[in-house]
Image (tube, rainbow, N blue to C red; front, side, top):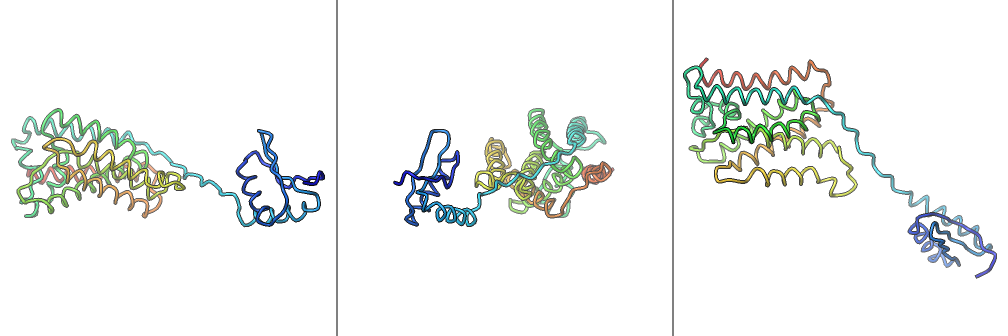
Length: 292
């Protein structure tokens, strides 16, 4: 090659040099790739430098560098009030049910009963979420409920998170009741726990709160949610897998709905109202169940 060489491209990225070398090769322009270990350069004989430079400019115009999408900034809300509310409700109901307050059998009055729900006792869809068969059952749902509720509350706020969770869980109970035999009975906040997990997965995915360039990032929230569902929601002979799955699905749909509704109110008053509605659904459902 002629000793009078001109640099037409230089970069620390060897692949960029190699790509442009292919462009010059396709145009039959004599060239040489020089690499000193730190950077590389494309050089061509002086008579070809103008043409080579112009062709490389055209190549760069037609192939602009890919710009990495900046992940959407996630604004965190205060999740603590919702967590305190959840813990107080399930613990308070557990204590009152254990001591048969109001001289009532809380389990008979509030559990999911397929036949009775079909006959119109819809309050059971809510009351069953606060009943537990024992200390171990209660502690399990308390721990997982606080864990997933923390993330849900930080995403959409305590009030809207728990309103969405309660409604999703009740819907999951309803669908599960319709799909199973009328004699089906169940209790527990686990449906709400998996509704919270589904809410997180749906809100993050539909809100594109993770980088969407790679498939692992696009589907990460769904895969992660389903993995946790399989790991924590399908064990044990008494596990109501249908309620767990449908709770997750309904929570996922709630996440989509919240995204479609737009910006969630940040002010504490709106969050308080939403949380009050969630508490009110539980309170009035128990009032009807116990005939207070």
